[in-house]
Length: 289
Figure 1 (cartoon, rainbow, N blue to C red):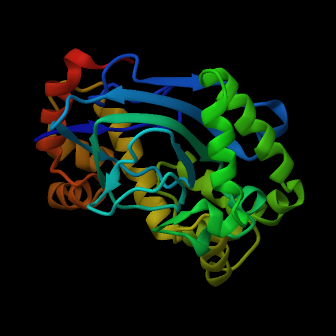
Figure 2 (figure 1 turned 180 degrees about the vertical axis):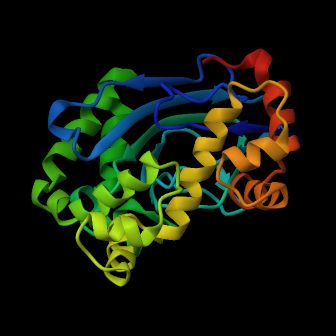
Figure 3 (figure 1 turned 45 degrees about the horizontal axis):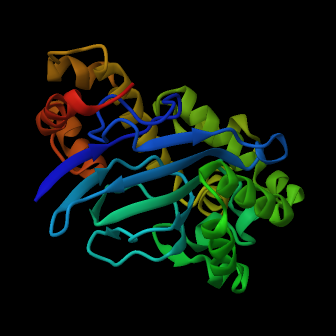
C-alpha cells in the first residue's frame, strides 16, 4: 500500500508542488461569472489503478466546504465508504482517502461563508462531516449526477453542473455570512497571528458573536481557522526552504517553539515536519506546479 500527499493552497492553480498526484490527473475549469461569489474553483479528476492495487492519499485540510460528484469508484475517507455525490463540511483535520479501480469525477470548492447560498443550510450544520447531497437538495443530487454522466466529456459535465448551481444559488444568503467571511480573510491575511479579539473588533462584533458567526457560516471555530491559516503560511514558507532549520521555521511562523510546530503538523497534516518534507521529496518526480 502506497501513500502520497495532497495539498492545495489558495494560490495553487491545481495542487501544491508537495502533492504526489500524477501529472494530468487534475484539470481546472473556469467558474462562471454568476457563481464566482459562491464557488472558488472546479476541478475534474481522473485516475485509474490496476486491479487489486490501492493508493492512500493524505489530504491536508484547507477549511473549505466541497461538493463532490463521483462518476467512477467513490474513494473512502478515513475508512468510511464514499458516496456517489456528497457535500463535505469544513474540517481542520487531515483525511486519508483510499482510491482504487477507476476514480473519476468533479469537485466544487465553495468560497468561505457561501455554503448556505448553494446548500440551503449554514456550513456549521455539516461541519466536520460528509452528507449525501440528496439530503440537502431533496433528491436532486443523484439526478444531477446522472445528467452529468450522460454529458459528452468534462467540459460538458461542468456546463451541466454550473447550470444547476446557478439555479440553486441564493445570492442573498452570501450577504448573511459577510461578517464571518471578512473576519476569515483578516485572519488569513495575518497568517493566523492576529488576536481574535482584534479580529472581532475589526468587524464590529464581540468575541462570542464572532464564535457564533464562524461556526454557522465558516463551519469551524475562529481558533481552528487561525491554526489552519498559520499552518498554511508555514507551508508556503517551506516552499522556499529546501533544508529547513525547524527551530527558525517555528519562530518565524508564529509558533511558540519547535515542539509546538511538531504538534501542529501532526494535528493538521497528520505527519511530522520531517515526514512532510519526506513526502515532498519522494513525490517531486511526479508532480506539477
